[in-house]
Amino acid sequence: MSDGPDSGRPAFTLVEVPQATEDPAQDDMAALFSAPVQDGTRRKGDIFRPGPGPMVEFRGVTKTYQGNSRGLDDVSLRIGTGEFVFLVGPSGSGKSTFIRLIIRELRPTEGSVIVGGRELGELRRGKVPYLRRAIGCVFQDFRLLPDRTAAENVAYALQVTGHKKAEVRRRVPEILSLVGLDGKYDRLPRELSGGEQQRVSIARALVNHPRLLIADEPTGNLDPETSLGIMDLLLRINRTGTTVLVATHDRHTVDRMQMRVIALQEGRVVRDEESSGYHDRTGEVPA
Amino acid sequence: MRIGMFFREALRSIRANAAISVAATVTALIAVFILGAFIPSFMYVRSAVDSQKAKVDVDVYIADTASVAQVNSLRDRLNGLRTDGTVAEVTYVSKEDALRIMRERLRDPSVLDELPSNPLPAKFNVRPTDAENADVIVAAVKDDPALDPTEGIVYPESTADRLLTAAKFVQWAGFVLIGILLLAAVLLIGNTIRLSIFARRREVEVMRLVGATNWFIRWPFMIEGVICGLVGAVVAVGMLWGIKVGVVDAWAAGADSALTKTGSAAGTIAFPMLTLVLVGAGALLGAIGSGITLRRFLKV
Ligand SMILES: Nc1ncnc2c1ncn2[C@@H]1O[C@H](COP(=O)(O)OP(=O)(O)OP(=O)(O)O)[C@@H](O)[C@H]1O
Ligand SMILES: [Mg+2]
Image 1 (cartoon, rainbow over the protein chains, first blue to last red):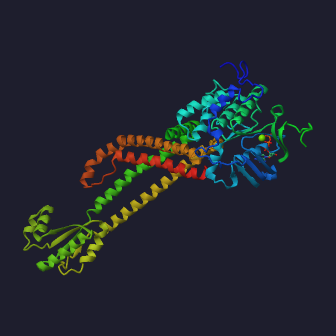
Image 2: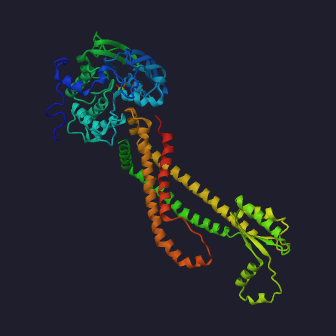
Image 3: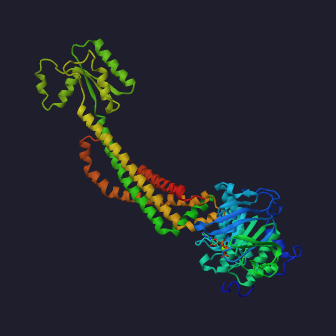
């Protein structure tokens, strides 16, 4: 492949926010994200409690890092099952901290985090891997395994959940192709551009059909066009019933999509609005 | 499928941290080599001591004046010791037998012809199951009326004691040395596995974040330790084989006649058995070494 990912055919073709019934891509997505995600039946090893409750709930959560640096400050909010939410705010406002609390990479200093009906503070250590399998997470710094190819990185997430070899062989190319990485399956992360690594990270987060998909700056390293493609992908996944939480600085994307926006500043929620843009309705930078 | 995957993961880790894996392998090699040199030597010494110990027997001399009933009662007492496991064998040596044996031993048996009567008493030759039991036998029959008043009971007390002390020393020294050696090897291998974990700590972190369980992450490291232990053991066995064929066998062939002359029945462990033991030990060293480390350093 001498073609770069962005020369020639674009990785994604973004149609105006598609109508679910008319869009053939939507059917592909439904096929890829098979039934369990939609009908809410419990999968093997699933630790989420069934029920109508919110997917994520923060109750008075404060996270203080060592050296008294504040990550989050008394945050209380709910994210309903099936919602699409943007988490915005300037650098250092606590977006990554928020996300790391959800996957229990961090534990709150005060308050409680409840995910899928599970109070994470009460979750036994041995259960944490199962929590993480139910959540797909795209990390701000990708967190790819450096000595594994793109395909192997994605496969690892499937192997962890005990998928059969044949299943892994079938699903990995499917999902890599979905994020526009055709022909780059056998590249090591260091042989991929930042944006390509990011897409491997996205593929890995998607491959297990998570109930909750979290993306920390998923378009941070992407050109506007690919960026749109990724956002479109996340939206289509959201349509299959998956709850999606995206932390971003990308103002254009947020403004264009008009979804729920939670704005953080210095660890506090300063705005939480349905169908909103990157900034306040007054057009002011959130103060 | 699972095992195969963990195995591939282990090989991947070994390749990624070649230097560390080589260190662990060499550690196992040295430990197994020393163990492999030590075990046969130790067993040789022990078997030499044992074969000497087997020769420690007790002669219970019978007075010429003892009645048939008294002799029978003494025999019964000794046979009683045989049933409780102290004694392996009781042989009656009559006065005539004793004289004949004496005659065979002497360079010039004609001197015996000049004796007016047979001065040698009859005896029971008692072979204890273990040299340590000699005292028990002596204590059991020392007041027997049938005993010869002058000869009484004779057994090579000092030889037996010295042999026993030597045997015990060899045994304990051997166990302690092997113990220290194995402990050191386990700790060293554990330490190299710790380095391997440390070198891959970012990866381990990522594995956890995508939902790998503790054991899913641990197995490859465990297998890595076992592979290093096995490879080290196999190389060590190869080296030992070379030394055995090139040095020990040649030396033993030369010394063979000398050894048989002294009547030493000492033997040692057969090489295939030794190989089995050492390869097993190598694998176990690796498993325990990495197991201990994983418990300490790989928690969710
Ligand atoms: N491990 C840590 N130790 C100490 N302080 C930390 C640590 N991680 C984050 N912080 C601090 O917590 C605050 C929130 O950080 P966080 O990473 O959540 O910000 P963010 O909103 O994700 O920023 P960005 O948009 O730059 O990624 C910052 O002030 C940061 O310095
Ligand atoms: Mg961040």
